[in-house]
Image (cartoon, rainbow, N blue to C red):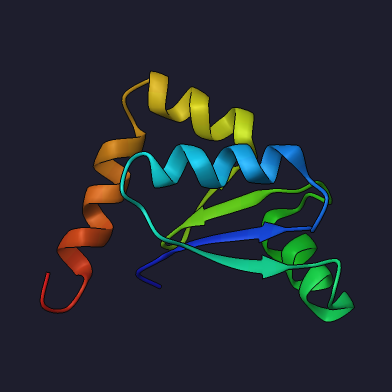
Length: 92
């Protein structure tokens, strides 16, 4: 999976913050609204082992929520992880 996937709900300030944070890095996010589809919420629970939103996946790597995303970036791990997506993308 060569994309950034984010499980969200309509009313979620952390979801908005996470999307904005990634957009500032030039990253396009595929958003899955779990409040509109119970099956997708269950998918999120199974993949992330968490029930809160957002849940962010970069490729096959589960990052976690907004705070986890920021922590990963401050530790220097976000940009290299995003770079692996760019390298794996066709015609990148």
